[in-house]
Image (cartoon, rainbow, N blue to C red; front, side, top):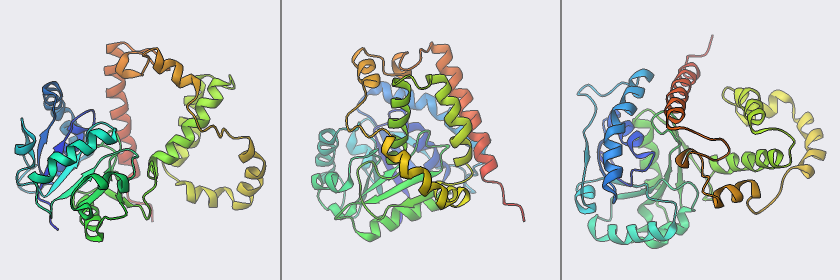
Length: 312
């Protein structure tokens, strides 16, 4: 199963980066969104994403990057595509409606991948004809900088579909992580949300301020985990130490199954974060732009270091 052309449906915040990364890998992209403003915004963001790829030294094929086009209709977007990547809002009903519209427009051999952040693929593929060609392809934000992509097969996904997406990710120079089971949230978000549950609980209880929490995680465990994976960290620290500490600490960790008031109260008041100008912290438009530039610069610098050849 060879992928030469991708149809990207739903642009959102990640669409421009995904499109730019595919094109830089030699894969032509046609993108579509139901909101004209999203297409306009994505078109304006493409040069930014391409500049970041330049700074990372991500080389294009000999003939240069593949083309990126925007289609006004779903029909035009998927025409000739080998893979359709669905990036619409995280709502199963919205995704199901899209799949129903897709079914008559694409052949049985076209791969349909979802960039869902956590809805099990087994649930999503119930809404599509030929479920064997559906797979999860979960990118991390910002997708043109973070090289890891999760690949998730559902209960009815054909092994060759998983293999084709895995090989495509390798082909464009990124790192596929193939899950052996289809679990809600997959792996990255399950680990992330376990961390977020504990940090929100500690801040809400007044153990630490939001600012100091960020310092603790970024310059403590985050600094280490960028270089030493958690399973390697167990060996570095010693399994005997982990056993001793976890024997009493696990019982005291936050185990709530609902969402903390720290979050629900803010979302109820419309404080959603950067997108609304206030969440845990407050943001001006100037501060948002500065943060985006600063974070991209730092992520690029860190990735360059992590990609350096190991010392002999």
